[in-house]
Length: 403
Image (cartoon, rainbow, N blue to C red; front, side, top):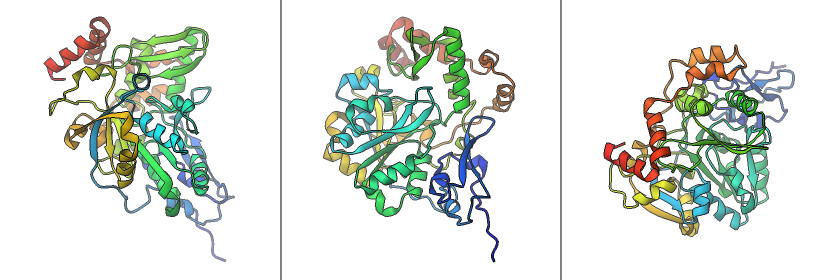
C-alpha cells in the first residue's frame, strides 16, 4: 500500500490567508490558525488528511501561471447621488456597481464588521443593506466559508459580485470551477497591504477602555474636512455616539500607513500590477490633475474614485447600466499609477517592524506602542490646514505646492 503524502502548501511568507485550501478540502482537514502576530494561516490535521493533494493544486500561490486581463481602461468617477458619495470613502463607484447588480437580482459580497468589529466577508441581497459594505476598512478580512457560499449561489444561477483584495480574488477564481465563473463579477482595490486583526483589536480595546464605552462602528475615512487632504478617523460608541480620533487616538491608522504591521506577503505582493484577474479595480484617484488638466477641481472635496475596467465583462456591464449613476472622466493609466504607488508596487518594509512585533507581544497596553505610530510633520500639517482653514483653502495650497 502506497503511503500517503501530506500536501505542500505555499511558504508562510507568501500565504495571503485566502483560505482556498481550507474550503477545497473534502475532509475538512485544514483549519485557519492565528499566529503570534494575529494573521491566519492554514494548518493541516494529518489524521484527517487523505493525501488527495487538492489543496496543494488549488493554492493560488502554487499555480505556475497567473491569468490576467489586458491593460485597463481608466476613468475618474463619482456617484451622481451626493448622499451616497459622502457615505463612501472616495467617489462611490463601488456603490454604483453594486446597485446595478442588486437591481438585476444579483448578490453582492464585501467586507463588513461583525458586532465585535471583526472584519469578515459578508453578502447582501438588497440595496438597503449595502451601506455596511461601503467605506475602506484597514484590517484583513476573514474569508471563513465565503467561497463555498459563493459557489452555491452561482450554482443556482445567481449573478454574484465579490469585492475583496486582489489576492483573495485570485484564490476565489482558483477555487471555483471554470463553468461557474461566467456569472461571477469581481472588484479588487489598490491595496496598501492588509494590517493585523490582532493589532486592530488591541487598539479598539484601548479606545473602549479610554472612553469607558463600547465601539459599535468605525470609519477610517470620514469626509467632515473633505476628501483630498489627510484623513479623519471616527468611531461610533454605543452611548456617546460619534467621536473624532486625532493624534494618539488615531495612532493605528498612522501605523498602517507606515507599513508597521501588515501581512508579510504584502511586501512581495504577487497580485498587483495594471493587468489583473479582477473585472474592475477601484481606488481613490490620488494625484489626479498633477500630470494632465482636471476640469472638475470643485469635486475634490467630496471624493473622486479611480475606476479601471479590466475585462470584457467589465466593459459590457459598465455600458449596460453602471455608468448611468456615475460622472465618468477618461484618464490615462500613467496618471492612475503615478498617484497610487501600490497599483504596481508592493508595500515597503519598515525597519522598525521587528522591534514593534517584539514589543507588541510583550504588552497589552496600547500606550506602550504609541512611539511607533507618530504622524510625519507633513501629515500633521495637512490635517491642521484642513481643520482650521477648510478643505477649499487646503486644496488651493496643495495645488500651489504641487502636492
